[in-house]
Image (cartoon, rainbow, N blue to C red; front, top):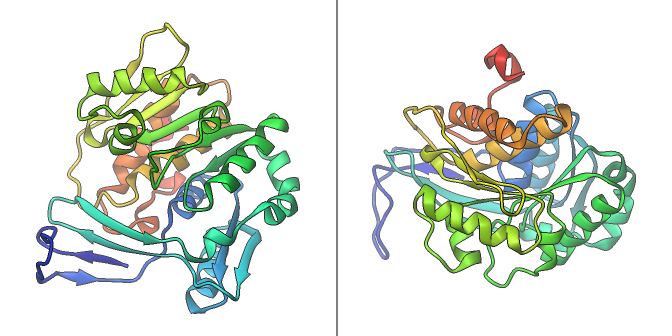
Length: 295
């Protein structure tokens, strides 16, 4: 439920906002829908509540052409929700309540195994139980499916097996900071954090830096690459990281031989379009509205 306000409130402060609207979100849902809007064939594995929001969530997936065969509805938990405040600079503060998503477990993953095993890319986050995410990543790797892991919302005591289960470990600067214990506020610090995360067993690491682009770290000993992005006027940065990951998944699935740094460069451009419009999924560009050279 996004709210636009002139600035983010201080603790205990009440301020007037400009606009309030109800939209659909969730990191995994956002990433899935951005990939779908670029032309990927997508399926979602998650749980929503047996409530008004859950029914509408499923319909929203269908409206975007997402396969909902593995979207369950729980009667004992509400649909996950988020409160989002966006200031005039386009910066945001977000609080999420995972709700029914925390009930997703092994049983649901095994039902979804036919879809997981035939996918080209699996994307996981931490909006569900960490062990469920880790199990899904392992299932994908056992079936030679490429994996992208986005450790968000970040947790400091991340199971070390997540690194080994990630072909691409993709996080933003604040998540990288929490996981490494070192500050990540610029490109050089992101390079160091990326190298540290790579040592833990990831296939490769991407650290997104908002308007500074991203840093790509691949093989041990090779140079990290700073992928710059074009400067744009940001209206709302909510979901920009999800747009990036959804676009990255699209490129990994459709252009598997493309160098990772080129995929990241193109994903940067897709995410750059998303921040120029208010909203999350509604701001995500369709393939037909993007330059032909991105495809």
